[in-house]
Image 1 (tube, rainbow, N blue to C red):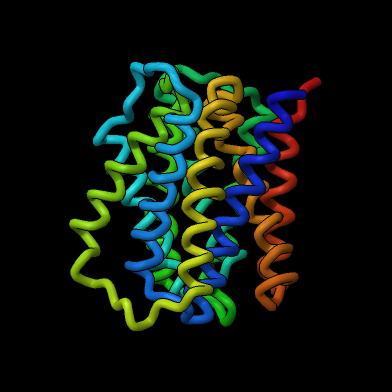
Image 2 (cartoon, rainbow, N blue to C red):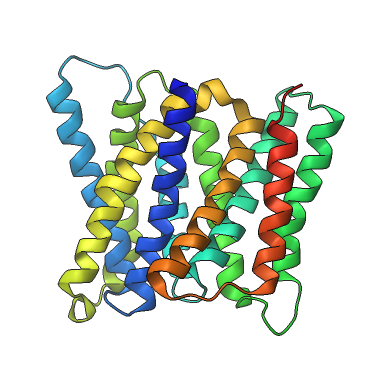
Length: 274
């Protein structure tokens, strides 16, 4: 039950990140570099305060390699959402996450059942169908950026399975990622485009949906394993699509519905235990 609750909270946080990012950038409430830096910096501050409030020394401090994956994800994720919608972006993102994490699991010795393979094929068919060239296919640059973000997030999640202290490890990764993002994006900031609403969304994305969400994810991931951890994240696009329709006014296309059905069926098939 504890694992289910932790996983559900994490998926909700991941969906909230897509909605907050697309809501801020899609409505031009803030520029993408500023959003990324505020998101990472507020996440680092929130996590630092939680570590201090908890007390006690920790041997976990994060790493520059994990921070590089986190920063790469945050930058590509944010820029992608200037070009594509929230629900489409989430489906592409977690399709790429799935491929990265499952591939790593296979290399490390995971031995899925035949049913797992069928579920994987169905689930991966969703993002493929969504990006097939056509009248409603997403912007190709935005799609490629989101797939790159998914690969970075998959790598970050894999590294997180080894964390002995998820809270302290995530805090260390966030401040390192903030430094890397400043170096990459600092000269591109356009403060004149930032509104209070945009800053507020970036702060909520960083301090709550990212900082706390990632810590909970690091806590749940070791029990899930690479295969299940990858598949369960494909529930996020469904949550994001519903949220985007309810709060951002995005339409739900037939292409997106078919892709979501394929993903949901594949995830359910692979996670089912007999």
